Length: 138
Image (cartoon, rainbow, N blue to C red):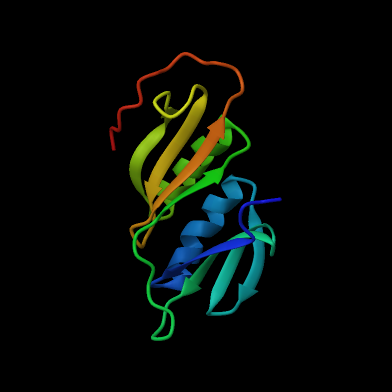
């Protein structure tokens, strides 16, 4: 069983956020699986395995800053996530690279989305890999 059915964050501008998340999620192999025009968009593998962005309004308050880590299928997908995010309004919060302080083989990149959320893509190699420098030159 998966941990989540779906996770949702409220965003300031759904259109702007969809222009960020559409390419970013596609880079990780996730597609749009739900859209209620002007209200919510979901990305994932199905409506029972998705990440949603929802337009905030007076009934649904804007989400405070969160950290979300999405699984990637490869290091190349992590790299693609990072560069798509930067090209679509994201800000660097940690360039792609190994993070041995978390776990051997932990390869990740971090970006700040248009609403200030810390978004991560992570791939975990099964084999032990030598650590490399991961200073953030952003």
